[in-house]
Length: 108
Length: 121
Image (cartoon, rainbow over the protein chains, first blue to last red):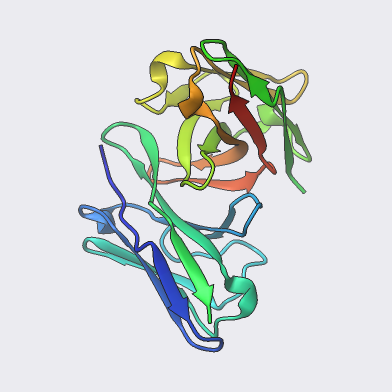
């Protein structure tokens, strides 16, 4: 089955840029979506279809996808961005949704 | 505003069937979209369980397919999850979500708050 690999943790100082990677075989050929999950809360979609933001999501959140790696970039990081982040794709070869392993973002 | 709310028993005995319902407000299930379930074991990541269109088309996680049934009740604007023969490994927070499914993409744009289901005797 299709596997998405994320780094377990990323640390970033306030005001700096956080980059969270999501690795998968030829992931560039798929649409990648990203979710933010604060402690004790449900996930929230922050980027869909590689780089589109849902209404209400700050422009500081952006995404890219090429080759074997997709990336979620959080610019001008704030304390409120501290959360777990998950990437997700649809594996059309087996018709099922796959989530990445998750990355905990810590704001120093 | 689309809102989803899970409901059901918080404790299920091993070998029994877990049953949850998701009530949708702010949008009619029969108007479109797929509707799905995702779970998250304590301290672990997200796992997709399955998705269903109001007309009956379904997709299930291959690892759970033999034990999962998702159904829709358009008259109540609800959809449900049944997971049979549960074990402690099925202990998790269960989320319902609206699924945006196209020919090239699938994502989950609205989520319920989640409900913890514990499997224990």
